[in-house]
Image 1 (tube, rainbow, N blue to C red):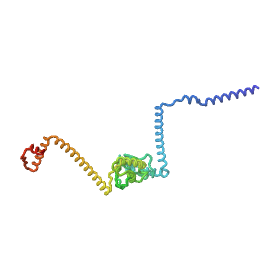
Image 2: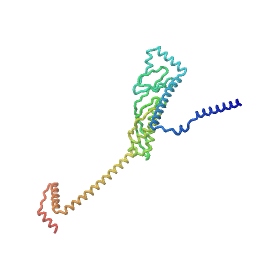
Image 3: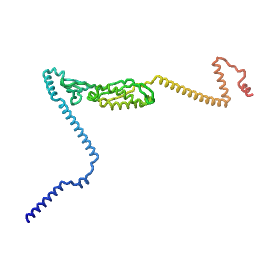
Image 4: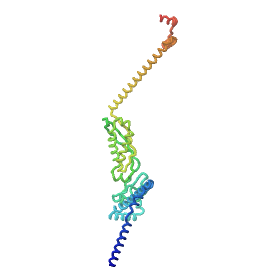
Length: 330
């Protein structure tokens, strides 16, 4: 019996220990949920900024590692052998080999290096001097300066069915040499063709009056569309300008005739308004003169003086003016 009691006591102790162990691993839900307070706004913003910086650092490190792995993997067995042979030739013909191995690009240029047909890790090189491996590296220089391109005159049918001829000029530059070399054969020529198409499509949605009056808005729309389309080529469209909008000769003559008729109508209106104002002034003057006999006599003498001055003659009055006035009344 004592042995059975001892076994029961051992089982009870073991059960209590297991329950205590489970309780120790069970989370305190009351403290973890009820006493949790939200973080301050400033602290959360700092935490987000820290996380973003950490993610950017990780991305940069990953890109660096991928570049290294890409460069190592791109060589291969034959590439390593060719690399060793090239360095052997460099050492044999040193220092004359430095004339071939050292290259230089200007401040406004970048060099895209292809090693065994693949882009060398690190992107474009320059400005300044850099080292290449003969027989393995191929260089393509890219000019980063802004270039101007004339868009050939385009015949465009406007929204109000008027055919106009428009020519423009664009200002563009390369900001990513690798994209401009790898993604398109001739970046600037492709940009010129795309600009001509964009010019036709954009102006085709406007009337002739809008083309003449809203050039700035049309230019802004064209620049935005071109900049978005050429981003994959590594090209930045800096400015677009419409040089000239030429109308057909028949339309020019019709517009000139319309403008001339409008000017004639305005001139006639102004002449009629002038005559009306002159008649009103003359009527007011006649009313004033008729109300004063002295003013009428002065006006009569003034008229006689002007007539005598024009004809260079002398006018004699055989009878006084007062007597003539009395005769007129009778």
